[in-house]
Image (cartoon, rainbow, N blue to C red; front, side, top):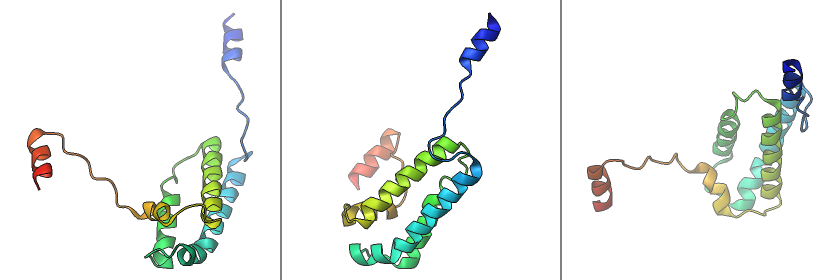
Length: 123
């Protein structure tokens, strides 16, 4: 009885795009290269106040955010999202504000105690 419960509880998960880690790695590198190649056109087309070098650094930073992800299905989902973002950006379906959102600094934490809240609102 317990062996049947174990067999029922274990399911094989189907891959989304990639079959193994090597294929997922190739897809990530291809996506990175596609973004990298489009940066000069994006800078010109959207007329953003950033240099190509700054955009490349931001691209690298965005990819490095997910460097510790090891699950192939999650990697595949991130690849799909990255491809959609690239298509939207290249086809100019985004506005300048959407592109500039990537360059926003990290969000400051809101004050938690009364005095800090008061001082923040008073200034």
